[in-house]
Length: 200
Image (cartoon, helix red, strand yellow):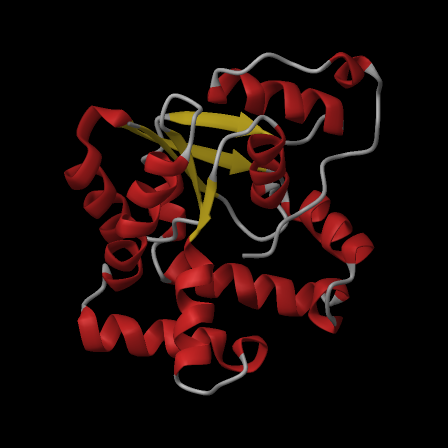
């Protein structure tokens, strides 16, 4: 099994990397789905209670709770895939989660850091406009601070591979495919706007 995890601040391009993987037939497991599922199990709206339930899971089951709950999803996705058992895991945040995955998969796990400057990420999130906070620079800075406090900054530094997402969308997609070990598509030679952000 080949497991590739992604880590990056909001708007860095994790969501687009996941889109590239899916287009190439590689299954994607989103760690945030674990939290959304738990919200629904508790009868709560994930949009309003995502952060609180993530914190509750870590308090109740340990700091690696979300990673631990993600492991069966990864193995299931690999078993169902016909693509050499490669799986992309979207959205690591802490060193504890990284340790859990490295413990589970050993050398078969690769952490990919996706980086983009604050100004670039802010512009992408503003264009995406998923919610009001996407266009609020102060809210984005606070969100960055929360993510870094959870350990995301340290996790970025421990990545095996880095992707700089400041060039065109085509260039970003090509680099992601290189990391995933899949061939680029012909249309990627066309210059298009910067890769949009994710938000998980």
